[in-house]
Length: 346
Ligand code: NAP
Ligand code: ZN
Image 1 (spheres, rainbow, N blue to C red):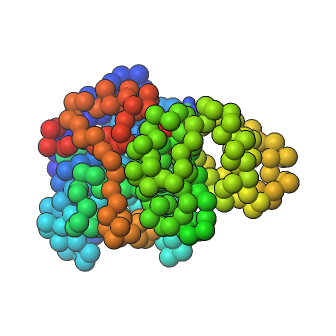
Image 2 (cartoon, rainbow, N blue to C red; image 1 turned 45 degrees about the vertical axis):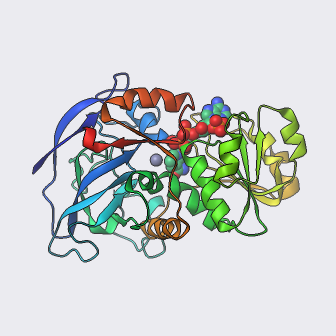
């Protein structure tokens, strides 16, 4: 076992603090990654603070991991020492069925989260990216294109794939009108990726304070949801609405913005039930659905797509000891647009 250093949450109410722990011994099919950068996803905050009620402590969050391979097991074929590698939200999945072949392993029981979960033995906790190294099966590691800056590429491993997957599934592209609700870490990636796919992109943000940025990142239109006129002006407009907000919002009002056969897809996860009136769905054959990250195959496809289109996240690079302050700023929507921890500062 190798000693690793990181930052951990020790319970729901305490700030994250330095933490030393052991990484498992690498197996034949494992690689070891020297973590260079780790993004801060809002899901890290939900889990560090037990907002989803399923937290195990001590918890080392972080599932937007980018680094350099420092060792490979004897059966590893995809990576060699010195390669750029990433790890996203899970490090293992069901081995009993063929879901990886059909590209949906993220929806199957048996998924092992990168942190706040247990290895296949059921007792060894998994620890995430706010640390100096990680041991991972090569089949759950991703190759990061050489032309993308490693720090700004880290958020692609969660924010990027979480938007790419539904954009692909609901066939965003030329002639499709797509709205992104919330221009935070996830939302700004949605704007860039949907724009690169050729869709007509609208941001629906609480205010117009980030309008200039949104248009620069690729949005065609930008509206404030605090303005009731927005919901009148855009009634019946969108083929697809991707909602990255986890707060309670007026779901029926957003369904009113869909065209016939349009879909509202939940990516953010509100604590309470989502109240929807049948009349918001039935007259327009509309759907409300959810989507969760993406498979490993699709994540690699997304990284290659981003490599081809030169897409990375807009980041604020921070020191490890600024993580607690960064959490507070994410909660206040005061981040442009993803915090990434420089692990050299650990
Ligand atoms: P984030 O950076 O905090 O972005 C969320 C955005 O929501 C904010 O920037 C803000 O955008 C908007 N917002 C915040 N409070 C709001 C309110 N009271 N009313 C309306 N809008 C509000 O968070 P994130 O990292 O993008 O994550 C967003 C959510 O997705 C989190 O719940 C996270 O756990 C979840 N998530 C889901 C998946 C998945 O697989 N489905 C993956 C990763 C994360 P504006 O300022 O533009 O309004
Ligand atoms: Zn995430």
